[in-house]
Image (cartoon, rainbow, N blue to C red; front, side, top):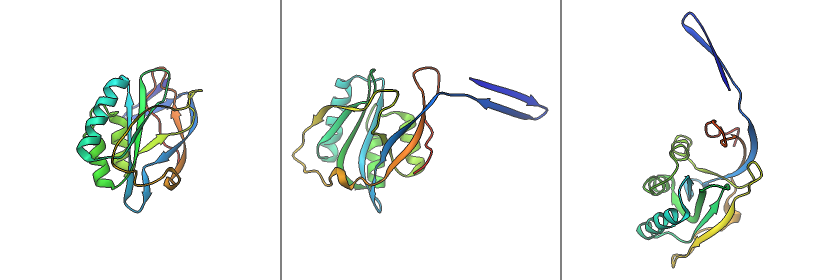
Length: 166
């Protein structure tokens, strides 16, 4: 719900959204090194697998893990490569079907964030792994930039989430 009032040349607004607190992890591992992260909304798993397989081959990436993040066709993916931010940004940006808001927010902040905890009762579930001959370059324990943030209930009319802190 959004209420706006105008008084002369000023507009005042009030918004109300249902939110939930969630946990996530940032792509930054250390200094300027990041892991690759992707967020896909409203795309089929088959389309995402096909696109990530192409990306994996072009950029010689290690295994890519794909998780379903809701009851609908919403997925996220990550791979344990260690690359400079500029290269990770380029890899994610050249991948078709990546959520525009996820990409824009990541570019603005200088890192990507993926939700790892439940959102409105649905916890991300591993649904597929794209195998690779390229070895992983880091382990999950090296992901040390965990965050708590709030996200808007997007099951209705609301926009994407706003991060509360790092």
